Image (tube, rainbow, N blue to C red; front, top):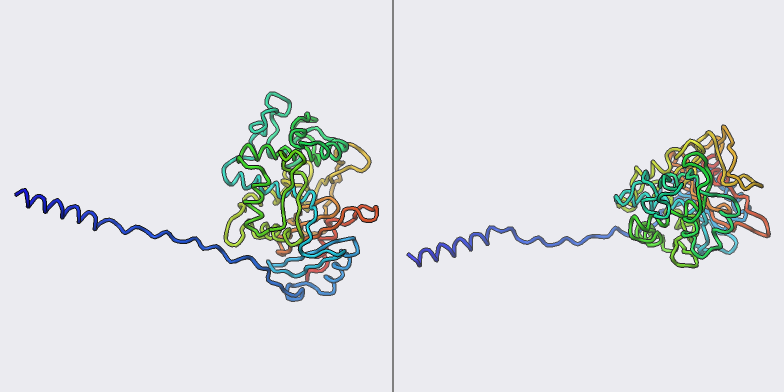
Length: 372
């Protein structure tokens, strides 16, 4: 009897073992092939070749270093002047604001923050002060009401050792939502918001979540002299071809090589409509071509926020859904979703003592003048 029970016990164990599913062999994750631009002729891309050459000549004449045009994801124009090459890195200035906006969008996609939250949730110095009610959205929309004047925002901010600490220490000029000002210092405080919300410095986020996935191998976000503060308002080093990849990411609604880098919902929120009622030309750290009340970064000759120009458009007659990342001296990444066109231009902001006059309207001529 004991022998029989022992045999039954063994049989049960063997049966249980044999009924267990075979262990799964871990599938190797296959990396997508390295991205490579497909080149097409202007004619095949739908451009009037003669008119496009006119725009290229105009761009060169305006002290440009490089120009890239992409249509339907394909490379149409890649030009270099003034001794530049595809490897020449140069400052993109406030184009960095649009990269910073994208980092905030990624953080919101990840659930690390909500732009409708008060920034004081992450900036403890603002608690129980006049800045306590400023939201992350206010900082992105430039209607935070934070302290602003030309000397402070274009001078002192960029001379201090730790820009983020300096920007946080400033006071409140108006109630959030009451005044629109292109406020570099207010935007800089997003450095602290991102660090506290994600646990990573923005330059690390940009490297890991944007530059490396997109193959923007010549791009980086610079820090100030303290090495404790990543520039958000400015300080992007890049190339025309790297910025073309950034533009293509947005034109493709946040998808790169099958991977969703940033959500289409964020892109729509940042670029699809004005972020406030004070400046129709501004989204969330992106410039828009929406008609209405338009304010530029500066009101020339004053230390006040820019005056309103009613019934205006950054590119008169241009597509209303066109939007751009714009940096000092005509650094441009323009995206026209309607025609799937991207235009990138970089150049020296000051040449022979003259400030560059290259403007968003010049870049838009690729679409408004040269596209059939």
